[in-house]
Length: 91
Image (cartoon, rainbow, N blue to C red; front, side, top):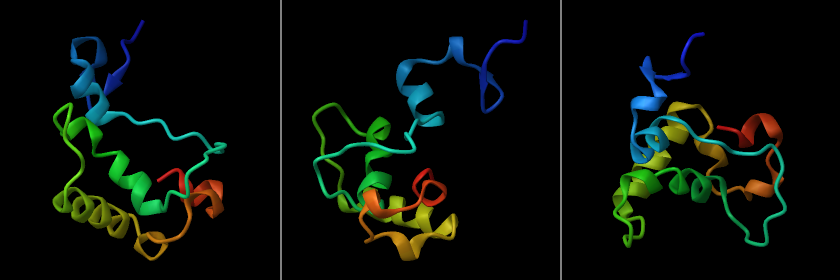
C-alpha cells in the first residue's frame, strides 16, 4: 500500500503544522454568517504560518493577494466568497 503523500513526503512523518502548510480543505459550499471576501479566505490560509496568538499582518495579506494573482483570480479578491462559483472559490 502506498502511503499518503504531500509534496512527495509521507504525511505520517509531518507535524500538524507542516501538514497544514501543504494541504488545505475548502468545502464547495458553506453556510457562513460572515461576509468574507476571496482575499479574506486566502488570508485564512496563512494561519499555519502564524504563531498561535498572532493575527495576520499586512505581509500576510500581500502574500495571499500575490497567490490569488498567481492563480489568475486577483480580480476576485474583493468579491464576497459566498458569491463565487465552486470553480473560483476552491482556489
